[in-house]
Image (tube, rainbow, N blue to C red; front, side):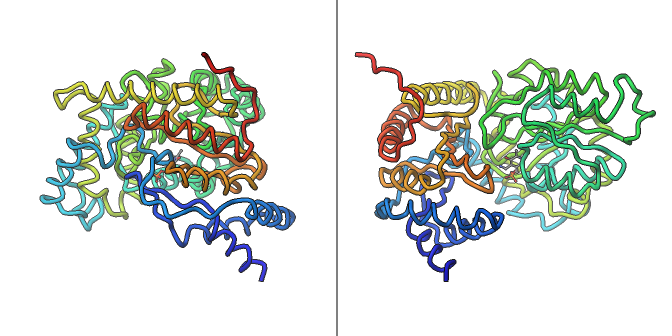
Length: 446
Ligand code: PMP
């Protein structure tokens, strides 16, 4: 009975999902899914979350049907998805030649010229000798980590690492220690507890130690403190595994990610992982590293040996996007996109802060969580924004701690200044209505 009642409330009021093209279709199953997630909360929190949601739902108005809106929720950071003529025409040509699928694993008939070209391009773009690509970013982390390390090894993972990393770490059988989010001093103390300083790799009780971090943390919008982390790993002879899902293409002068932005030599990052689902407007994931590492993965990683190869048109989309970023399409559109994303992100972040919103993350990051804290306010915030044709994604437990609910804004180079100004006006109005401007606002200039 309770589930039915709460589910009905959700169906009425919860935020719909959004897709890449800027439409926000009202998804029937979405609310049900979210509700089921909530019911997985530890029993002591069930009643609390149910009460908060029931109370909040009385205060919001059912939205009208919105068919088209400004998308502030997708990871289409550089606008390569759907709107880029150069990439789309090449992907369509590739579809005609190679079809949507190779219907084969990479080691059977699933390696085409597009796949090999993609791997060469990725290695060149991220600045490593070699690369291997997989059909999905999630699978890249969850299948590669267990091949790199196993029983007897130690994984030291940032406390806010993505679920795919957690999955891979657990699946590896290695001993896992977690360090406080983006806190190099705590990473060092975890390392010190586990090995003596200066001890050679061969004399330790661990076969191997891998420290896993992300370039930009997807729920925090925060840049990794990579320089400090790399220095500590060097000191304790631990390998560095960097997930650049949100940072590759999106930050750095030429889009080459956090190493470029923070001035870290890629030679100091042993395993560079990333996904194509964000800045490149496609799908799949990659690992870039030494030739030995990539050969080893090609011979041993089940996701390479036994899984379907990445769809050729998707691979062609990535190759084309990289060419644009490298200026190999004969234009400087790539550089313009990167500069535009940075300008847009920094403009939006500073305006939100001036309005009195509590915004997480760092300048230059296109991921901007607006803290709402109280989960009771989430449905009202997303519904009211949608009512005014602005689609935002709201995130709560279990993706965040229970009392740290937020709206996560993702900025794109495809947003015009007018789009952003309109979105800011809407978010400001809704912020006043829902009561989430927790910080003092800057007085408006006359
Ligand atoms: N790593 C991180 C840090 C992510 O945020 C995500 C998904 N957003 C993934 C890996 C998985 O990538 P994909 O969605 O491309 O499968």
